[in-house]
Amino acid sequence: MGARLSSKPAGRPSFGVVIRACRPRQWTKNALLLAAPVAAGVITRETVARDVAIAFVALCMLSSATYLLNDVRDRADDRRHPRKASRPIASGQLSPRAALAIAAGLAIGGLALATTVRLELAAVGCGYLILTASYSLWWRRVIAVDILAIAAGFVLRAAAGGAATDVALSRWFLVVTSCGAIFVVAGKRYAELFGDARGELTRMTLRRYSASALRATLAVAAAGVVAAYAVWALGRPEHGPWYAVTIVPVVIWLSRYAVLVARGAGEAPEELILRDRTLLLLTLAWTALFLAGIYVGR
Image (cartoon, rainbow, N blue to C red; front, side, top):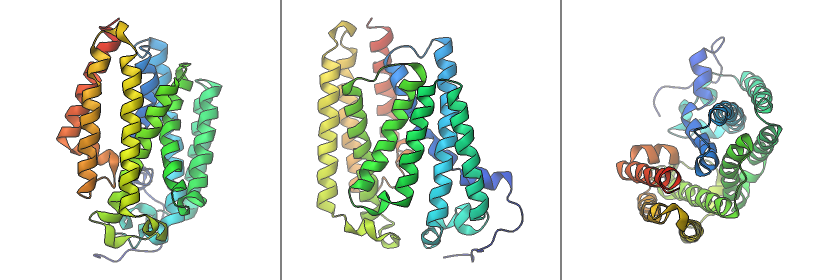
């Protein structure tokens, strides 16, 4: 597997090691908190933009705290994984004790920062910490529940945007977000089981999933996204044709993502979305049409 990994950290970890352990690439998921204020058309207000920026930093701190806890918990399994073995905790560059201390500091700091925006944001942050910590400790070993727990984390990210900006979340927003999260997480599980890294599974829970069950989950979740989003988009004729037209890139995006998952991609959703040119162009097209509905269609 290459160079031998040390089981002990050599001295005090560098700042770069700590940053890598916090998984900054995963922070892109926290951009979901933009969804509610953007959809409500209030993101351009100065105070809203400021609150969203602070909320994003707070959410990055909270999510990194949970990543550190998860990596401490998984360090033995990660050492047997071809990609995860290089993570700072698994490779011994960062000790579990130091990682937990940093995680505690990030959790406390993130919640404190959230309270400077709104107490509701801090409440969502607490819920996120409880959910992700319980996932790392228990839910990840329960089939189906692990998918729902990860999906709930995405929903809480979106809810954080509403809490930070005092924007009420509609039932259609919650349905689309929930089904979309389940779709992406089910695709991640499928890629882990049947993708390039299928021979390196380190958790027996993953082996309990079947290809047919995950494909069915993907299909049902995608149908839920399209149905709920279409009902929402077609129910706003006062915004002109813009929202209705956004249904097209949504459907194509889901189809493209499903095709890539079937080919074994999707183990790292945030990397796949940014790396695949078609998905990226569809995302940009949807964004442009959606913004036109908000600022042109009114």
